[in-house]
Image 1 (cartoon, rainbow, N blue to C red):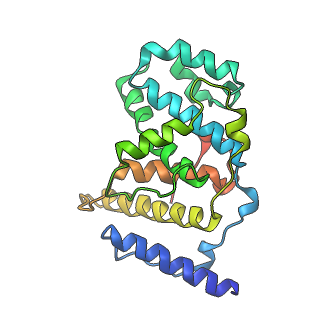
Image 2 (spheres, rainbow, N blue to C red):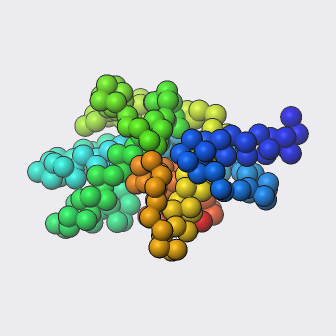
Length: 222
């Protein structure tokens, strides 16, 4: 299949996915927008490390008394160097309620990143939630408070085209919602806005959007 056909197929899939959420007025007129390089993606092992760090932070947002124990585990298993500067402040300072809320939402980033490396077979739609059974099954696959080496070595990406398409879907949702907000219009879309934003950021980080590889610096502008 030549590149033009590939891009047209991606366009069709993306617009169909957006229509499921009631977004039917967005256009993709510049096809090169749908080109991407899969050679600069983060390694699957770095995705695994980020999953574990994000899990730790989302867990601690509800279990602050476990902070020292989780920090000890991260340091013992050589995961601490993958904790961002902003995230390290969570361990050093008393987090605000807003910070706790922000970190609690990062379970959504855990979910989408787990999907990219096949730990979740199906990514929940944005107008539904992952079931308790699916979440429990995912948690059982993560080496929580254990040595993560074998887990990390086992990881590999699913089809990167699927990852890119999900990234663009959520990027376009972010842009659409920002346009509505700037125009003082309340959204009537039946989707989880925060989950979409977390997917947008996490997948931008995966493919090093705008050549940015650090989590704290990941760009979500549209």
